[in-house]
Structures are given as structure tokens and as C-alpha cells.
Image 1 (cartoon, rainbow over the protein chains, first blue to last red):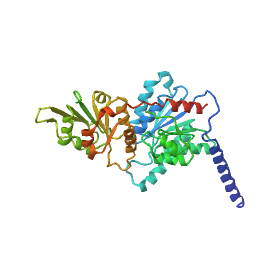
Image 2: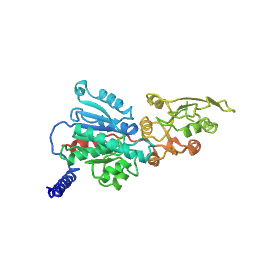
Image 3: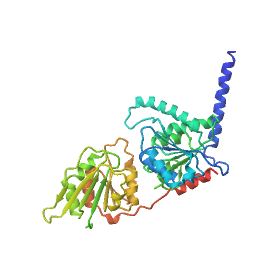
Image 4: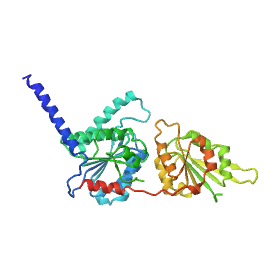
Length: 218
Length: 171
């Protein structure tokens, strides 16, 4: 029996690597046309990040990008009310019924938190993000930093590798980043995890050629 | 000379005592007086320094500058629209809200912030002459020397192109 164990491990590893290759091969490739609705996960990063994201969400067609699930850090008590107010202003009551959800998740790191305790809280945030994303299984994930969105993107990417759900991952770097990517942006760019990676300044597009530039949000 | 000249200083949701201290100084307020401004309203956010001066009067012609402050307001739009000059922290929200309102803007960089990526934005916009960029230590000189006529209107942008690209990608 013991002889089978290495074989089993090898096969499992091979399977994961093969899935990883498949996911990377199709990352950034447009989806086949179809006129269905997309379950959209919107990660709100607090403050200016939330403002920029809501600016984008406001322009999404209400019935096509539906249902929508808004995620914000547990320490952020401003973003979800702002999202709710924006939704109630822009969509008719009929489209909203049961189609808009607002959830809080653990944050990996608070501003000024020490790097040592950050490791523990990041692991917790990843576990919680995995749980939330596995339950939601979104078609589209929209995020724009900061750290809150990192575990969410990793979880959604893992879902793709495991073949449980194919989500289109979209990252929009903040307008405040002119010369350099944010740490979150840089990690997601280097991981090749996002299908669409937008920057808001042409200087950044030049430095990071896989990114996309279609003008600024504001 | 700016007619009626109202100056609005905003730090958003941050605390930026270094800025509030400077705009609360006689030196700064004399510059505002000499440029014809008559009121100075401060939004001080989470700052702990409270402004001391309520009125500053110039000796020679009794020209007056009225000063008041508040911590937060649900909507800064009203303050922005009634201002003739806005002095702001470098947060992107405040910057673009002011530029959209079409008000002349001096952005002051908070040098106490550790990861100060926000000066990238202010400096880039200043290079394009959409606003004036200063530090607390250079604010007095910047306001003294500013030529608001040389500022250019910010061309408003929108997420429409990004959303269209996303729509296309999803098929």
C-alpha cells in the first residue's frame, strides 16, 4: 500500500500544475459572448479607494452585473453605507430586491500594525476571504486595493485552479499611483493573477506593459 | 485682488496639524490679507491643534480676515463651491472634488506620513498646472507667489472607457 503514496502525491501535484497552466493560459483571454448576467463581487478598500470603485460601479449596467456583493473590511464602517446609498440612488427598487448584498471581511493589516502580528492577521484574513469567496463563487471580481482585496483575489484565483468557478478578475490601480504601483498592485501584477489590470497614468502603462490604460476615472 | 475672497482649508478625514498651525499663523494670514482675501474657513478633521485666531486685522487700512473652523461636515461640496481658493491635504478625494468644482487649489503634502505616495499625484497634477503643490514649510511663500491665472482647468475624465472595455471582455 505504501508504494502508492508517492504515486498519489505525484499525480495530485501534476493535476494542480496542469490546472495552473490551464488557468494561466486563459487568464486575460476574453470570454465567449453570451448575454447572461454576472454575479459581481465588488471589494471596497475604504476612503479614496471606495470612492474610485463606486465611480466605476455606478456605470455598470444594473441588470447585467447582478447580483452584486459588496465586501469591505470589518474596520471600515463607511464604505458599505456609501455603496448602499449609491445603489439606491442609481437603480430601481425592482432590480435591487435580493440582488444587492453587503458583507464585511477581516482585514489583513491595519495602518501602522507591526509586521509580526500582520502575519497572523493576514492568515486569518486569507482564511476568511477563502470562506466568503467559496460561498459566493462570483463571475466577476472588481477591486482596486489596498490590502483587503489581496486575499479575495487569491481565493478567487484558487477557485479557478480547483476548477470550481471561473471568475474574471479585474484590478484598477488607484489614481494616486503615478510612477509606481502600490504593493497590492505589484503583487497581483507579478502573480499574473488578474484578467484585466488597469492603471490610470500612461507612465505606469509604459513600465508595466501587461497593464491597460484607458484614461483616468476622475 | 480677489473680490470677497473666501479661502477654504480642508484636511479630509485625516489629521494634519502641521497645516492647521501654519494657516493659523499671523505670517500666513498677513499674506492672505495682502492678496485681498477676507475669510478663512478651516476643516481640521481629526487634528488635535485648535486654531487660536478668529479675526486678523491689518493695521494700515483695517482690512479684515475672518477665521473660523469645524471638524467634519457630511458634505464638503457647499464649502468648496463657495470658496475662491482651496488649500487641501493631498488626498485624491479632496483633490478631484476641488478640481471638478473648478476652484483654484493649493495642495499641501503631509510630510509626516510614512508611505507618502500621495505626493506623486499632487506633483504630477502640479506639473500639468492643474494645481499648486506645497509643503507646510513652503505654503506661505507659495501663496504669496501664486499666479492663479496660470492654472489650467482639469479635463474631467470618466470610467466609461474602462466599463466599455470590461463589457467587451465579458462578451
